[in-house]
Image 1 (cartoon, rainbow, N blue to C red):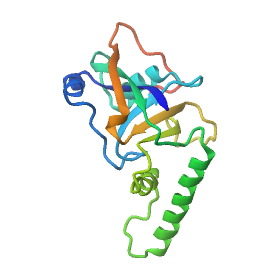
Image 2 (spheres, one colour):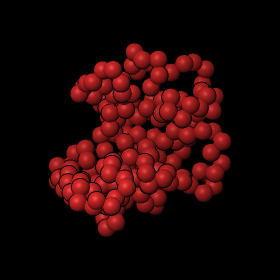
Image 3 (cartoon, rainbow, N blue to C red):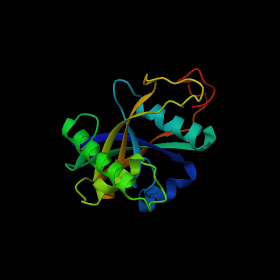
Length: 186
């Protein structure tokens, strides 16, 4: 499977990425250790999401934002968007972890976060890439909703050899990003 995806970063990282490739994030990120991208879909403008992530999450100034477009190719994709069997794998591992945490009275950290599930799945090295549907909308403390307001398909590349090509597709241009929500921040 080939995925065209977008990775936003600070312009100071351009030379390093061109020379050495992308660096993996920490294993405690929500999809685990890997390089993160946004995938374009009918409901998601991946280029815009990559820019917004830089601006609102990383707090980069507009002038410092660049976005790479990459071609990711792998047959070993854990697809939590389009593959029901893969979602069942995720749920099975999550259930087992929940039980393990409940039974292990000496465990100091009783939290169950997605990255722990992916870490367990990743032990078997069965997948090079994770593809997941995420709600990128900022949570509001005083208003609970089940509506997905900002759906994104995010890609976490575990095996960096799956990133076949990449080029800068965006550098800062004059103008402001359009607001995706009515909130002042992402």
